[in-house]
Length: 302
Image 1 (tube, rainbow, N blue to C red):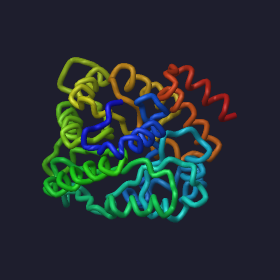
Image 2: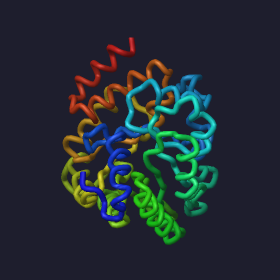
Image 3: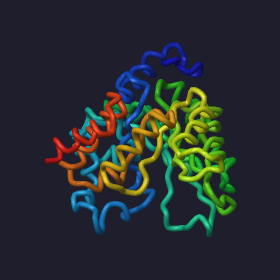
C-alpha cells in the first residue's frame, strides 16, 4: 500500500494502521454497510422475509462485533448511541445522507454533510473508538453535483490529513440519468480516483454495450479507478449461494477489491448473519472459492 501524498508524514503510521485494520493486510475490504436507517428509513428493517431482530438498531452492532468484517459503516449518531458497548469494532463514519421519501424523478438527490471531519476527530479522541475512516455519498449527474463534488474533495483531503481512510459511495443518479451502463460506472470510479478516494463503492451495472459478460465489463470500471480500489454494493437481498458466487466473480473476474454489503447481512437473524459474514470474508480476505465459502456458511449456519 502506497500512502497517499496528502497524508502528512506525522499521520502516515496512523493512516496505515487504520488501512490495515479494515483490510486485514490484504488491500481488500469487507465493508458491512449499514447506513440505511437514514437512507431507506425503516423499509429495510421490518417486513416480510426480514428477521424480527433486524428492527432494532443494536442488531447491526451485534453482527459487527461477533461476525467477521473489516469495518462497520454507519452514521455517527448510531455509533454514539451504541458504540460504548462495541468499542472493538472498526468503524467507518458515514458523514452525509438523505432519506428516500422524495423520488429521483421528482427531485435530484442531494446528501449534505451532517458531520465534519473535525467532529469525527474530536469524537474519536473523546470516545477512544476505533474510527478508521469516513464515507461520503456522491450522486453524479444530480443538479447538486457541484456542491457534492466540493464536499467530497474536502472530506477526502481532510480525512487523509488526519490519518483516516476515505471511502466514496458514487452513484450516477438524477432526472437526466436514464440508465447506468458500464461506461457511466467507469466514469464514477475514475472520478473517485481523481478526488483521491482510497475505496469507491459502486453498484455493478447489469448491462453494457459490449459483447462481454457483466463481470468482464466490470474490469473497465476497475481499470478506470486506477489505484483507488473498487468495492461493489450488495444490493437487494438474494439467496446465499447466488450472492457468494457473484462476489467471487466480481473480485476474480471483474478485478474488484471486496464488497459493501448491508441488507443481505442484517436482514438475517444474528446467528445466520454471523455465518454469512464469515463466508463473505473467506472470499474477500482468504481467497476462498465460492464453493468453499458456501461450505463455511453451511457449517456455521446449522
